[in-house]
Image (cartoon, rainbow over all chains, first blue to last red; front, side):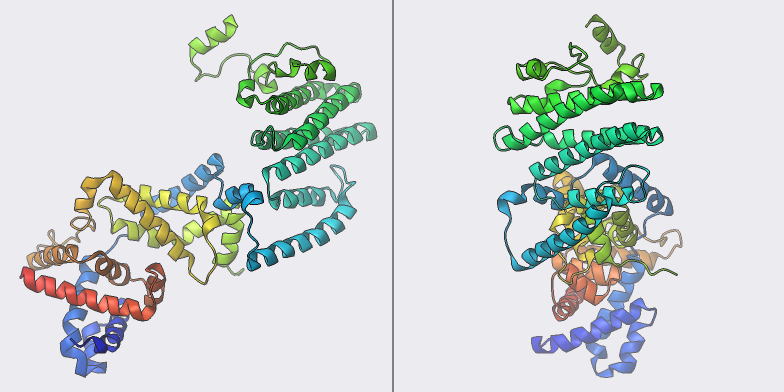
Amino acid sequence: MDENKNPSLAQILDDCISRLQSGEDAVDALRRDYPQHVQDLAPLAEIARQMQTDFHAPAPSENFARNSKIRLLNHLRAAHVPTTAAKSRAHSSKRFSWRPARAIATLFIAFMLAITSTGLAWASSDALPGDVLYPVKRSVEEIRLGITFSKSGDAELLNAFTTERMDEIEALIFAGRDEYLAETLEDYEAMLDRLVVQVTALNQTEDQGALEDLAFNLSHQIQVLERVKTNVPENLQAKMEEVKEQTQHGKDVVETIRQGGNPSDLAPGQIKKQTPQSDPDEESQGLSKTKTPKPKKEKTPGPPPWANPGDQDKKDED
Amino acid sequence: MQPLPDDALLISLAKAGDIEAFGELYTRYLDPIFRYIRTRVSEDQTAEDLTEETFIRAFQALGKYEERGLPFSAYLYRVTKNLLVDHYRKHKDEKALEFANQIPAPDIISDDKIIKAERYIMLGRAYAQLPEDYQEVIRLRIILGISTAEAATWMDRSEGALRVLLHRALKALRQQMLNDG
């Protein structure tokens, strides 16, 4: 076959195959529309028809289609699988390249952020839980978290928002708006959890400044919790204690990283012997390296049903 | 009725971590990806496992996906191909079966249509001896019924080049059948 003729023959054959897929008889169509090419193309169209008939690729079963999506999404949620975008964002401070499209997109985002955060922050920055503008305030926080470009940037923002939650707790207590207190304490804990996760990615030398700020703020928050606890309703006293211990744990993690240690040494369940009131001086002398119990652990009277009984014996011995 | 969000919107939401948006993309592309994988492996269960793994990998690498006018299916196809390479590396025995038994035979034997059965075997054997790109274009255009435009993006060729490839592939298949006689 002449190679130069292939494109036109190829086009005709492709057309026949498309017709075959829409239910037409490809060979009939060929005879009707391209009689001069029947001899060349009819055998090929016939093979295509046979392939299509005999080699049918089955679709996924209904059962699989239904269940696999649920399974997949649960897996992605549980694994917190970071997208490459998120990974690259974490390193982008070092390898950010100012390609034109990216530069424009970044400037656009910065511009939108300036408008959005300025306007909304102005309107909602003083909002407390229960206020109409409070959801706006929280949304602005999430947007800002979504567009930070480094781990230390994320940690700084989470540090600021954790402090913000603590200010809200204090304000709610002194305004007597106790009905929102439990929820705000939960929000504070959730924000603190995110902060601690982010902190573990920081580096002792590169992020020294951020770590110092974090340690200072968390100490301050412990002091605030201590100061306001007498004004908290009785039914929230235990919760306040739990939050305080969790904050102390966060501070221990920060201090451990500051001193070049491994935060995994602070595994929940290891008991820290400390006085109820933390003394910042003592902590700076090394007591902060001791272990802090995870508050939720204390609430559990015994081991979970799936726990190894041997582990419990060992814990009892401790 | 509210129009469905387009792929570009869903992709940008998924890139930002919106797992539900990725779930919608999964619903849209489950069928072609599963069917493609099913033509490359010998069992439904393996195809199901690889399909799920494909989407997990696609989600993890979503940051690498850039809008350049290519359909999202082309990106998924690339992820799938890489996954299949890994799969065959781990299951070398299955590679031998790849071209022989990967597509379940229709009920030709139970219908007692022996001629059809012979043709099926002959066609499968001839197909298995074709070069990989010939097999792939036949798989996409004829077995899976994917449009020329989409198959061209999947195989990273122009539409014209894909048509030429298909023409050559079918000619080679016919010649192989004649040779096997």
